[in-house]
Image (cartoon, rainbow, N blue to C red; front, top):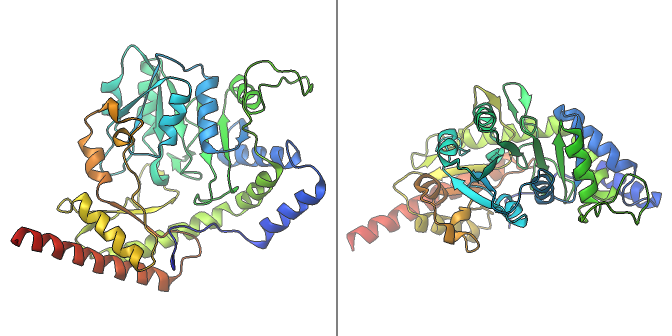
Amino acid sequence: MKIPLSRPDITQVEIDAVVSVMRSGRLSLGPKLEEFETAVANYVNAPFAAAVSSGTAGLHLVIRALGIGERDEVILPSFTFIAAANAIRFERATPVFVEIDPRHLNLDPAAVEAAISERTRAILAVHTFGVPANVTALAEIAARHNLLLIEDACESIGAEWHGRKVGTFGNAGVFGFYPNKQITTAEGGVVVTSDEALAAKVHSLRNQGRTETGDWFEHAEVGYNYRLSEIHAAIGVEQLERIDQILVRRAEVARGYARRLAKCKEIVLPTSELPEGKISWFVYVIRLSESFTRVQRDAILKMMSEHRIGCGRYFAPIHLQKPYCHENPILPITEGVAGRTIALPFFNALTEKEMDEVCETLEASITAASELRTAAKSA
């Protein structure tokens, strides 16, 4: 793509940090891992942190460490990345998909409350696209029904709700650092929690269930190889040093798109201001107006691709995908939103000229798709 959907912000500082680790001879379970965990914990103001190989691994370990398993239900949105549901299924628990708030695209607290059954063990709140979910309402529901609250903050490091960093409201929060995220470790994630026993459990499970005795061949339980290498941790340490300026830049790009697309009546711009919180811009996802169909949206994506501009359809609802479609919940808001979303190129180094080209091509593609619709009605 001439203008890709995303591009990581890697500088010489990160490259030098990786080279330093390579020369150190310590590539796993070393000082950089501990430094990164401490840095993330301090940044979000959480007492404990455990770095893992991915955000998905973090979600899995939290679910396992909390004892969620077969016959248990976990409530979550269908409008999210499939990893959230997969992590639940890894432990043979049942994902229960509910509706989202059509404006902010996060869990609708009323829908969550309505879905609670005698088998419900947890609420998995996703801070979609870096927009904080209403964790105040979700935490109140969880407390009233004696449920666990897990925050999937993989898309939202730096986001805040009432002045407090997301990921710190529930029993545990999970951050992800894939290359398209605000900051990256190439691959990796971090679990944060205020529960010391839970943190210790995650530390053990990520490292083959090893004990704290230091004996490499002594294992307390069945665990996993979900470790984060020293190389990945070193990248994360340097990225986190720059997170404030990175988030400022991403907000500037979001405002640049908003200015350019403000007069386009065929689209709905994403939430840009949140009185209760602070957005951490992960992606910039616009929605076509309700007069457009999914087929037209896909045609627009194809036109953008033909112009070598990377766009995405964030998100395909999980409950409509093959591994989960037999559960068949009725989610008209989720399906309606998902069929009209277009994620535009979004990364720190995006230039004014590139934004101009993206928006001009998008508006031309929307016009072309509208004409196709008019022609189809006339035929």
